[in-house]
Each structure stands twice: as C-alpha cells, then as structure tokens.
Length: 149
Image (tube, rainbow, N blue to C red; front, side, top):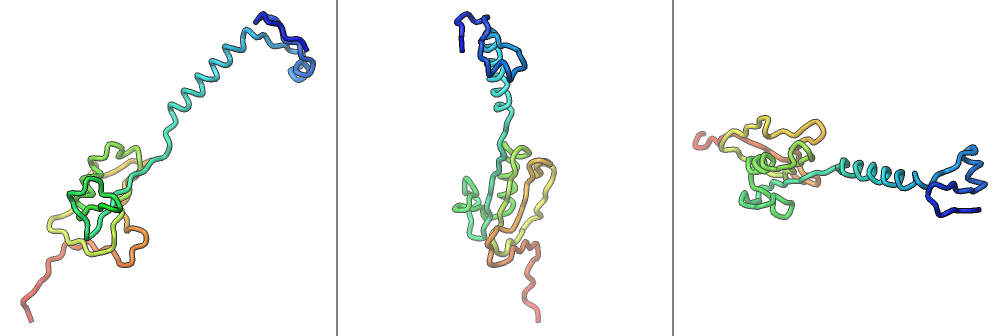
C-alpha cells in the first residue's frame, strides 16, 4: 500500500482498486465530498422537526388563574382551556390535547368554537376525557329548575 502526500496523486490500494472496478481516487476531491456531505446532513437536520405535543388539563377543582393548565395545576373551565389553545404559538404545528377530568362542568354561557380553536391536519386540537377518569365528564348548559311539586 502506498499513500502519497500530494492531494492529486492517486492512492494505490490493491483491494480498493478491485472494488472500484479499476478506478482510482484523487484526494483532491475528498475534501469537497466531505464538505458536501456535511452541508447535506446539516440542511436535513435543520429541516427536521420532531413530533411535538402540548397537554392542558381541566378539573372541577382547578383554577382559571393557573398559568399552565398542567396536570398538577389544571384550569377550572373549558373556556379557559379554549383560550389557552388559542394563545398557544405552536397551534397548528404541534398537537394540543385538552384533558378533561371527570365531573360536571356547568356552562353559564355557550361554549363557542371557531377556526381559531382548530389545529391542522398534521397537528390536531383534541378535547378528550382524561385517561383514568373514574367518573364521566358531563358538560351541561342546563339550568336547574326548583320550587315545583
């Protein structure tokens, strides 16, 4: 085996020459190939966006002043969760789950959704009963009627 220092001289390696069907490699092209490979890898990694998601939580014992709506500090109302979804800068780029703990959620005003409450085909906004609920989620706009017999 003979490796010459001059970049444009050929590397003479018998086994390599046989594998390359008699072609030889000029070291002058090697830095160009390495740079091109790194640029390609860098551009691919810059364009790669890993999957992401955000979770909000709602509970009948929550607090609408919660800054996060996390599992340990959930929101009290669905409307507050809806507002958090609207304000989320990743809406439409990351999936957003609104997890609703079991209980009765009484609405005093209609809960209205429009296009600002939606995600995208790739990153949906999902309102769902929280996993592990032992009681159902009831969203009620009804008014209790009392004083009759």
